[in-house]
Length: 345
Image (cartoon, rainbow, N blue to C red; front, side, top):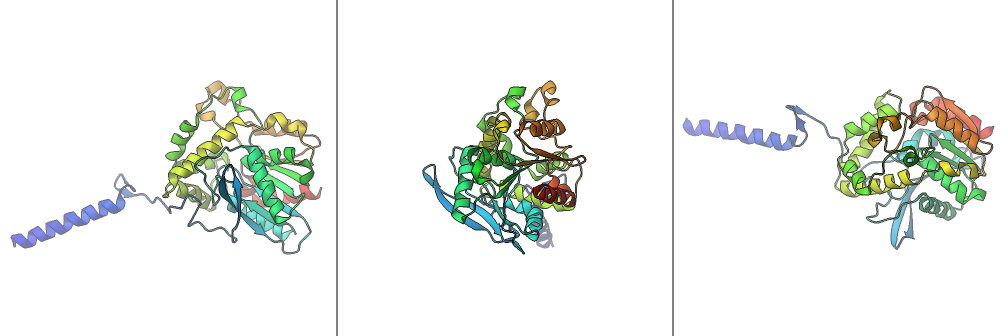
């Protein structure tokens, strides 16, 4: 009887220990907390809606690979649209826009830039918008594409501006969707943050943090279940086996964004430009470390968009009064209707 009781107690303790191992570190407050999938440093395990292509080239004394989507038009109109993603976005997050544009005759090229998503994450790389523009130009030359419609969102808008400044004869039309860099954050008083500090913040990033930020900034405090896929896409890389390399590349990229604003060069653009601005966008890199008086001056997108439209020669401005940083995802119907009208106009 004593032996049997010992066996029962031992089994109970072992079962509890086994459950504790299963739960840790995802058990908190006695409840199971679902962490979600873990992806590789190049988003291994996360599927894109179309097959990915690879462009491998030599850059800064190393071989790197840029992954991209090349989606043909249903009924080609002879035009190509190149979609440039933002900092916390990937080629796949353009899915709705790709489907819309290909249905309206455009061939679409959507790359993941070096340091992002499914593309290479170098341990050492001198990130600059000039370098990323050159990489993108080499990709398009490899594909035999000239004078595309260049559509850049967020950080991709900064890249699209730099591309158009460097290669003005190679851009047919420039579309800027809530581009950041329309203000010089350091000039306005945001303190400099070292790459090491960026890395420390990025290394501990969680799905909850990503979701909270995106809800407030990208979607103007609105949330729909379909947004969660993109939260888990990012969080899965941080929680995966290459999370430290992902965080390091992210830190290098934040340093590039913070130190290379494009606002001072807007007057030099020489290509037809369409600005599409969500008026409830409040994006401002580094505002979390800025003094309160400085914070109040940052990320005022209605003002930033109108000032940019006045500065860029011949620019046209389309505003979405109730949308945030990602109008193409928050209200795809309104955004795509305005985009097509702007391109045709």
